Image (tube, rainbow, N blue to C red; front, side):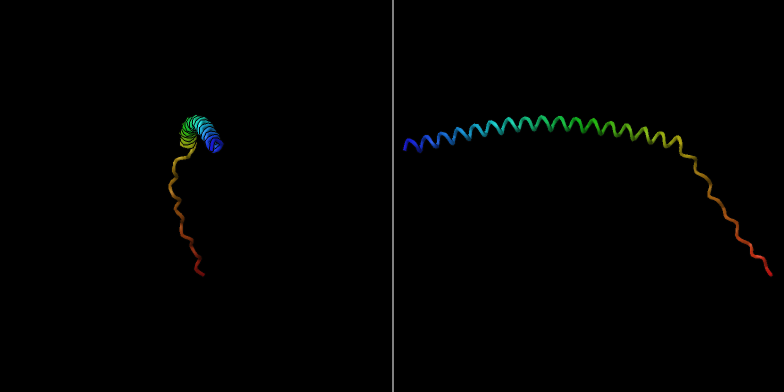
Length: 79
């Protein structure tokens, strides 16, 4: 009976260690996730800025709209 209690005590101790280990890992993962979110926000901001610069450059180099060309009808010679 004492060995049963000892086995139970050992299992409880293992469970407590596992719980602490998982809590530490969870905290590390939360920190890593927060860092990745911040990095993603930074990349999105930089991408938006690049998009604005490219759009401004395209607006400068795009020629004004040309008037549509009017085609003259083809005249057939009457023979």
